[in-house]
Image (cartoon, rainbow, N blue to C red; front, side):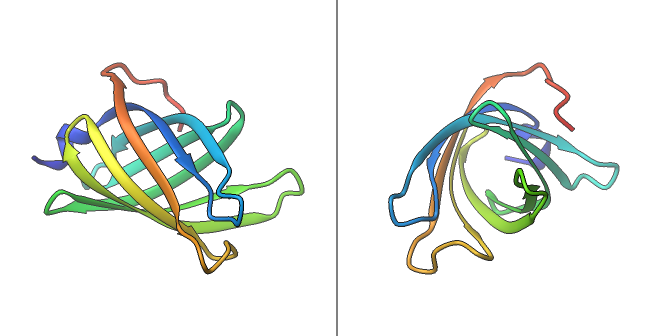
Length: 119
């Protein structure tokens, strides 16, 4: 598998890095910049935009991400996906201010090959 195989749109499901491990769903779009580094955009629960950049090696995808909440506070974190195939990504993530006893979990399943242009 190579990084170009990952470009596309994925449905995501996961749970947060908190005591209740609240669940969420959304969409992830992966594209490439001119240096073949990953550009990621998530829409979580229909309205929260998160963006990130990352790299791919040995079927592992690592993305540093960030987003703003309603009060314009910036949150940052990292997600690591094991690429089980070009259509299935199995990941875990952590935010700087997340609960230190938990990791967030996320699974991404390819939706379609057309782009949504979330960037």
